[in-house]
Length: 75
Image (cartoon, rainbow, N blue to C red; front, side, top):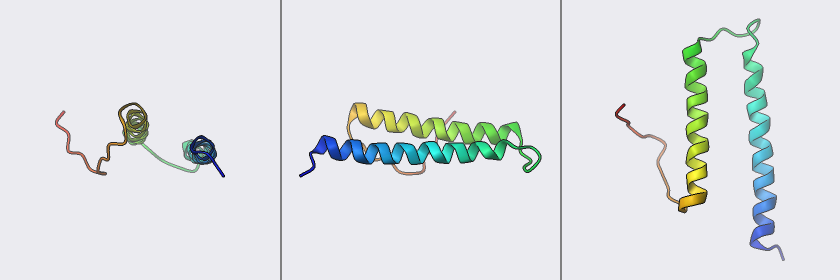
């Protein structure tokens, strides 16, 4: 029987490796001979990724608060 920690390790490793692989694929889009993009677009991509990472970190420190996909912010 698998313990909760063993289950966490198994699933977390698999998901982390999948995310790392996808980030590496995203990096392939940096090739200017194949793609055209603006600095603003790059900033939007990395802002979104950073926000998702921060949200995931918060879940580990403050519990499992659910949040919707859309959040209207006032800057």
